[in-house]
Image (spheres, rainbow, N blue to C red):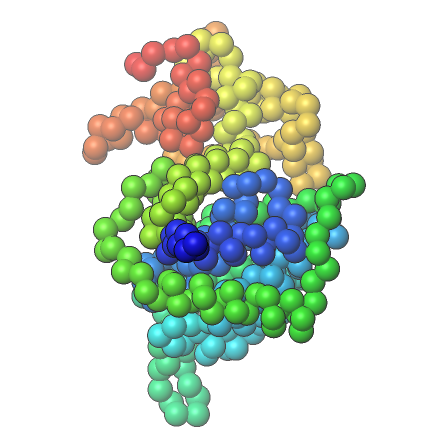
Length: 381
């Protein structure tokens, strides 16, 4: 009796095996996180094909949430890993100046960016990490030995692990995995690099590299479930999923949509955005304008807001104007109840040259707070 032939596995089945290995050693917060990490690892092997190199930010609220373990597993599965807990600008730029740059893995990134002073001391490194998100962005350095200008590439895939959030310019350039401590009953296999890394993960990494190299990723942008920067971040991951086939394209698009929306909801807002949102909360119903003094009084009285004690004292009119200026909002002479004082308008005034309404809050709300009501019940004038 002849043995029935086994049905061949899909060409992208290696992604299934990577996911199984990931689940063996790491507990991630949800299914979409597993999909994201698997596709990001696979995308590192296709670095030559991408226009954008998304940063994978592994964030935990406290110690012992598994972020270092996740980085250890990624190190044994990704393309040419270069692991570090600290790095100088010179070391990074010279390591990345090649056609197929290594994957930079930065553990304890909070030691680099965790405090204001540390962040200021590493501003050049942050600039390189930001610029390297897109192909073709270079770092220019003057070589004092040869008296010549060096043009160094910054393009590379990067994963960073940190306790607490990293600078938002970094976290905006890729998916964010928010780790959490394992609950009772959530068990993982012990991981040892010399054993599990060498005999389990490295052979899998070679298979993954071979599979990715055999793919012909199209030049066209795949159908994306997200837009703008998020689409740039997810394009390589979606392309890998489409090449794999099976249920990966559907899982990838669901992960992109859910992860992007979730992070938008938990990401820390800048003071400016928080201020815009709080002004929308306290804006007088159906009012076209309000005096600055009244607006400040309302902001100071908001529970759990920083405006009553902004850098040690209540928010001032000058600070209010400074925070709103980048969003195109400015103060006007406002006459209310017979009193003419400085204040803010819902709808701005026409610019003398362009005749476009400028300086109003409603336009800023519409642009930066799409979920806000934005008009206070008042139609445009």
